[in-house]
Length: 605
Image 1 (cartoon, rainbow, N blue to C red):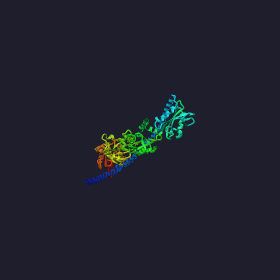
Image 2 (cartoon, one colour; image 1 turned 90 degrees about the vertical axis):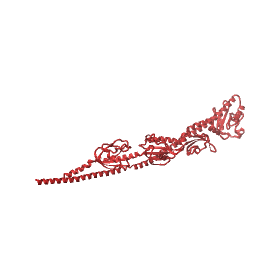
Image 3 (cartoon, rainbow, N blue to C red; image 1 turned 120 degrees about the vertical axis):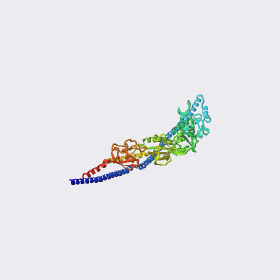
Image 4 (cartoon, rainbow, N blue to C red; image 1 turned 120 degrees about the horizontal axis):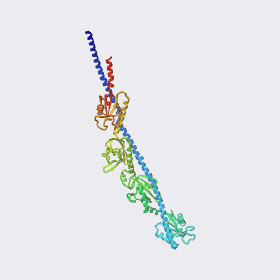
């Protein structure tokens, strides 16, 4: 019926209108829900950015600079105290020990050679007198020969004494039961010992031994003039006679110090020891008897270091000026018999003398030797330091243009910039000169590769060197990025939904931003790496658009696809501190599906 049809038509039209109104309402609610999800996504990303930038590069740099300054200071103390001072101490001990031994050997050589020399003279005279006796000459010839020898032939101070073994002497002066003095005493008034001179126990003993010994011998004793002397004795072969020969100690002492044969021995020792001279003591002071390198004996003037060492031969003098160096190590060792001392003077820590010392074959430079050793140790230490950390040892260079610096050890990364490295003296004036001019501190500088580095400088003025301990700034930045990446991965592990944080950078790492990015945090398809040498997780095209927008400094929302090609809502932003992009994405279906369910429920209820 028409009436029924009209009712049905009105009902259908009413239903359609209701559905249209409901659809519009639901559609508006759907859009609001999507916008709300996007707003939440962007706010959450801002929270992530704040958390990521808590791994601030500035704080990391400050921490590294503080650590570097502490480490460089500690290294400087080790170089000075443990290295250099111990080296000087060891040199002192070794030099002193060697000098004590040399002094002892030289004293004994003086004693033995003097005794032998006196004995040789006594034997020569004894053999001559024996020859006269074999020719039938009696005492009336032999005794005058000895007296004439004393008065005309022997050196001043030397004396030959003729004695005889006889119980019934016919001439001479009885000295004992069977010992008779036949010759006149050269330095006794009138030649009569019993009236004008007092014979010593040493002469009585020598006279007795001359008559009772088959081979002869010698001793250090006192003569009738009360002076020290080497006294030799020997028999006159084939007779009842004996010879006593006297060599004054002081004369022999002087002879030993200047005689060419003995000087050759001293010269051999000095060649072994370097700046070694022998000093003879005298009443006014000290007389140079050896040759100083570069000047003759006595022509350089004596120095405070040598005088101090000679005053206290058992002590070591250090830090006093020598004849040609403002600072030295002076060690002396006394030779009591010779009334002399060996003295060795060695350059110590005088940077201004280093070039001279190293080029002068007559000198041993502790400073120069230590710097050479330090250069080797610096290279060895650099090989052990991790990453881009490096220890540079720089040396003060004083030239026509003033003070500059040069590298003492070869830089660790010189192969990266060769042949254009700035390693010549005077280059990189800031850090290098700061080290040698004693401007201790830390900061960001450019090194010999022209790279930004965090560096601490420590000066060792006594050695004339400086230490620069540095690390590439890029390494510090990369460490912060690695920490931020670990944080992002940890956040992703907590959430079971499709919500995922991503952190990325331009690729290649040190290239300019193009259309390619590298994801650092793990993706759904597999693990990634923040290592600068990694080639994993590199993307371009649609899957990288959100990250590219972030790396270009943008911040916003977009609908697109993720690296897997899945439709997603993405929020993106940029971390200026770390120079990385951040993306927080969620699958589109995860946001939209609950809204479709709501729509169906409304339509069918």
